[in-house]
Image 1 (cartoon, rainbow, N blue to C red):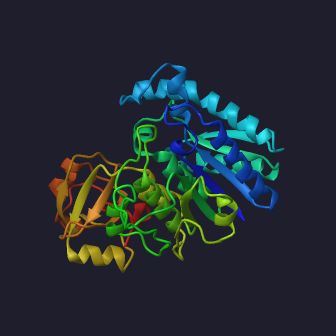
Image 2 (image 1 turned 135 degrees about the vertical axis):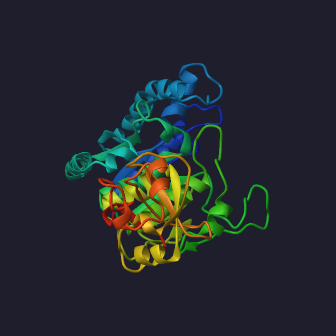
Image 3 (image 1 turned 90 degrees about the vertical axis):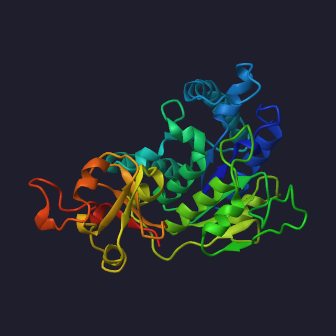
Length: 361
């Protein structure tokens, strides 16, 4: 089996923010055990910012991006050095790969990343992937190592995505607040009710939380990859998750796998606005797999430029698709509802071309 393993900040650091040697040793042991059983492992590790905080004498994670990027630059080599030491003690070689979600939207970068990771795995190396925090912008703030791990699982054609965290999986309620909360063992479809249960960010040391884990599992499901959300403290958790033994919360993959570019449109790019369409346009997009034309547009929400990602919503306000728009918001308002024959000369005939559209229902 080929597995992508994401370990969260809280799973490799102490409450003080310093790297936890015992946790790193357990992680290395888990990977070594799975590797020894013949499985290929790609590790996506958070903790660069948390590792940099104590080195700079900072007690809490700041909120501004510039400072976070500087802290990540200090913490990343410290994290990699400790991982290399722990893995090396178990006979494993690690190799660092820095990526951002944007690398998945450019075909050339996508292919280069896939080739590099493939070569590392062929050389029996354990790739350690981290977000390139020193050049990323809003990614640092939204737990995107979870999202990055899901995108990497698509990139390397993984069989399973294992999201290791500080809880045993997704519960029916917050187990810290509700003693009757029970573990959800299997999820067939990630819906709004589950997303509400997942809540928000989990700690000051990390940027994720259960919500970002569930979002990552949703991306993996659209990639045809099984996901497991489980506690990093559970003995033998990685091998059990890879070999489909009962552990944590399992998110079942969808039968169809999205192409990499459409996965990037759907999940790696934030939506800059919304385009409200009529019932006929919705049918054309969902049932006939056609492009969105100006005639089907009822309203435009937000401000965006051409080539931005936007959500496509029906009259009920629920987003059912996402795509790259060929009009800016002001220009689209001017042509909304017009037939193609009534468009100004030189205006695009499609608001969103079907090749740039992902239907998410």
